[in-house]
Image (cartoon, rainbow, N blue to C red; front, side, top):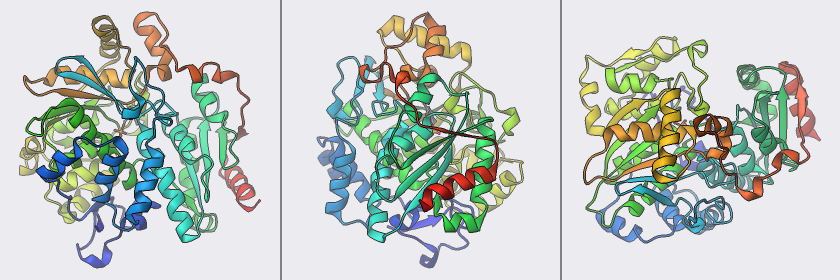
Length: 481
Ligand SMILES: *Cc1c(COP(=O)(O)O)cnc(C)c1O
């Protein structure tokens, strides 16, 4: 299996890479994103054989189609260590942790696929935990180390820290805006005592923190000397790990492989739903992929009008489903590459516009007419929709959903079809967003017992000014020591 950039100058084998080659990197050198040169296909016989597999065995079967440069026994052992009931222990309502991603039916034909039973209560654990195991494995093989530098407003940073804690060859330096996360989010990250995890609170905003990360990464000398890496959502291994639960959800919702299902996906950077798109391209019987946005509706606008108009940071709304507050969807280029017939010249032209701060409009092209063939539909939500959905879901089914999953449920309702189960992907547990749940119906969500009182644990964090040099000095001190 070889990987090519969506902007590759030519599709010759010379520029292609193996899975382990692209694992530790981010963007391709030409600014594009990596994709397999073609999507592996799943036969009917394979689907029949996969139906009864455990999550870990299914993950091994799916990942084996994309990874051919890790010996099968090693990959299998690594996957088995990653997807355990102990790691995905925070099931609710009598769910079975051994399922890893249990499907909870709300009513016939409408289910929630629980993806947030991992250590940080958000679906990002599903991929990040695998990434941690893969990083450790590949770095050990190569005798290398990596220092992951990132900025977080909450979910991604904590998922990365819990995935990388205690991993040999990996250090994490995670910047967060001082005083701007919830007490719970702060406690989750700062209470980690692992020596390879470094929390840096910056006296500024999330954007300030992100700017520092960019400035450090743009210093090529520093980056090389201190082996700086990232784990952002364009990382191919994160996308591929997410493909697995579309298969798992499909098998859980159906009796036979003659049936079809629809998935509704709360979306921000288009990473989660991109994995669904790839599962469908592989031959998983997905009737529809329902993309749900919040008030930041740049993707919903595209699927309705054909115009992709990324907003500026200043025009991005701060909403009550904050993990979907994006103005530019970093994985969207992967889908558009497929939409334009995998022609890198077209992608280069379109993203020259995006990178210049404009956008593009496909309405008048026949590319736009191809969208239904890819199964995509979309919708968006407001704060009022979100609160009403949280309230109604509790009243009708006795189930409390988080604000992001509520966005998925709201849009899912607009696209239900008789005979096609609708599976809404749950992207976080309500315990992570107490204030919005309280606003919706005057009660606090239940918190997993193991996390009660986490705010009282001792915290380990260094607070720094918004100062690139101070962050560089901090990294240098801890890498050389
Ligand atoms: C990251 C995140 C999303 C958005 O997922 P994308 O892969 O960026 O589309 C939605 N909900 C929650 C809770 C998240 O953490």
